[in-house]
Length: 83
Image 1 (cartoon, rainbow, N blue to C red):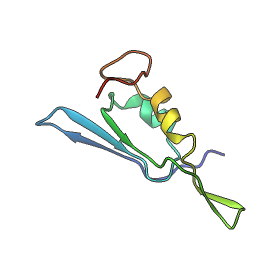
Image 2: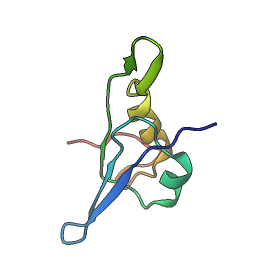
Image 3: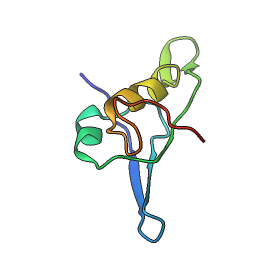
């Protein structure tokens, strides 16, 4: 079973920028594949586990997973672009 949490894609039309916000670190691969390329992704970078038993936030791999899944708007193959 795949856990799904709320995630949002915000499109700023005047600037032609898309932001993906996933606050729990459970990116939905199927949803990300259908969304146009995002310019900014906000997701946790650190895991949080409740009492050592229940993962609440899965940040350790989420950023890399989003980078691999999401189509890239400025580079090919999900590579980071220069700031």
